[in-house]
Length: 160
Image 1 (cartoon, rainbow, N blue to C red):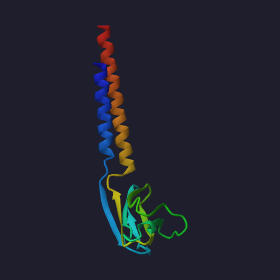
Image 2 (cartoon, helix red, strand yellow; image 1 turned 90 degrees about the horizontal axis):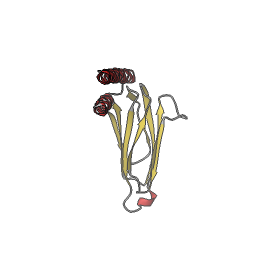
Image 3 (cartoon, rainbow, N blue to C red; image 1 turned 45 degrees about the vertical axis):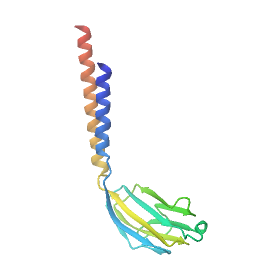
Image 4 (cartoon, helix red, strand yellow; image 1 turned 135 degrees about the vertical axis):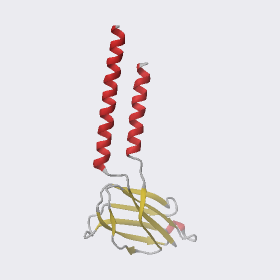
């Protein structure tokens, strides 16, 4: 019986934490092209965001394809917050996650021997750290109280 209570409590905790952190991605902008470019500024309103990217190598010479980008905060040109580098046709897509935000950014894209590329920028609408942290603390408190209650009940049952 005790193991069942602990399993239920553990499952409840994981379920609650999973709900608190379930990502809901909102598109900020999508960038397409086939050559080097520097993007306009875009605003990221939250601290969790990602860049999903893909490119198509030139079919005649895929081994010479080169793709990469650097993500900079507005006003910065030396210190970047993220970067990606890929070449050939071995890895032509991916995702990169950034854990800072609430400001403007821009991207410098480098592309060679690529007919097209796409970079999609999205932020997690559920990533509000102060609320997520509070939810986790509440969940841990509820689990602690439940564990104490179960232990007391078991202790009372043993002494009866």
